[in-house]
Image (cartoon, rainbow, N blue to C red; front, side, top):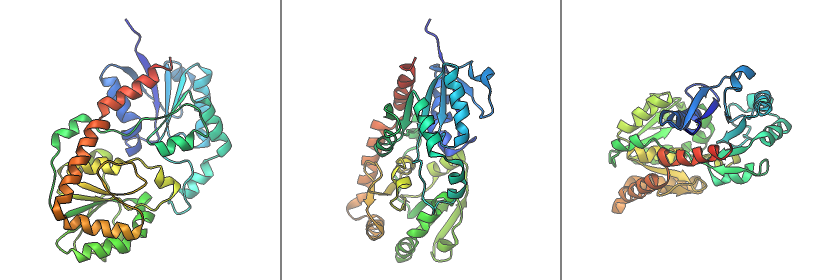
Length: 326
């Protein structure tokens, strides 16, 4: 009987969206399906816990404080998997810039990457970037749980959805004039915002609704029953945003909506823009829906989601990478 691989998993923090997509989420399904044994790691764990595993999986270990845990895993003979879904350099406009800058050390990060047996990223942009640190970087894309597809349907209500939050506030603010103008030029449409309730939109848009800040599970439950037919993803072009995966497009497609995304994001079937001017133009065109362009776009997106981004298939890729380390 073949020995089952035991993986100890270190994530950023409990119930985070990142761990849902990149570590606890997909690896817990590998455990449930009998491919691995799953140990919930803690950044305070000592050798007594680590030595029970074959593989140590570290999600986004960018802080210098992560080094000792990774070095210990390596000393104990574990294979080290590092998963990075973000760029390691963030702009000064980001709300966590100060704390991140104090905790990140480039020389320590280089050592961390040298200890990795394999590195997973979410897209080709990040793969190219992190290949400067490691020669064994592979794209393992974000993927949706297959069972979510049972709820799919293309929607047509006049609701626009924006996933906000503190980490996206600078991007949203940068596009506020375009969002306000298009929404108020189309008064039959309502803007629905999750996360923080940005006053610069709430006080300027006639039809506006905030749904508050939801954890990842409540968020998925909400978008699957939401009536929104359009998701907007306003992002300024910088290194951090260029490294973002197409989660927003996947969420829109699952919910039955079309997505408006920046042209540097890897999507299939979304409407794309290159700057604020083209964002406004595309946004207006999508709301007008001439020749049923929304229905065509969603059908193309849904086909691509089924073909390339199902967790069952992406997890096979993830597992085979891990298995081949041993």
